[in-house]
Image (tube, rainbow, N blue to C red; front, side):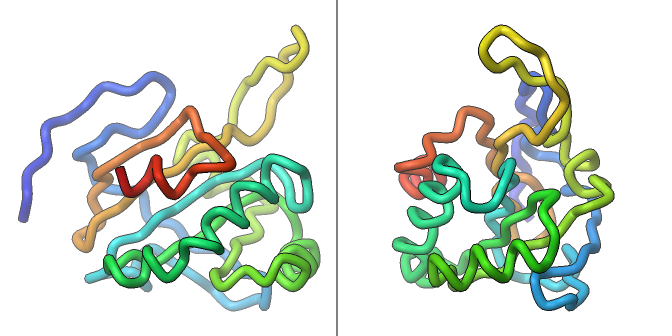
Length: 159
């Protein structure tokens, strides 16, 4: 097992630590958990809302580069607080090849520190913090991205 130095990130889980276990329902109501990805690398991305401009750009960038992720041994999984029905529409409209978890109770978002205060137009609100974690085959966080470039997210991940 590769030992990574702990990297201190502000308001994010730390690189080199074990990824929190999660379990949630995807767009089809199937249970998806971290355990399902044992032995594979996982890009776990958190986004605010289906069908909004930034979230659509991010999902489509990941979709357009999905073959690159698979060729490098990565799986991709998105998480938002939207419902399974919303995810189904989003996936169908944009032909997304990966699953989306409906985290309506915020348990996964909170476990991954992707829920909290954010400032928009000078107003502080609570919501989803656009965040991506890359998790290795043993379940260790090997990268954490908090300043996501929605139009070029693949390049941030595969840098």
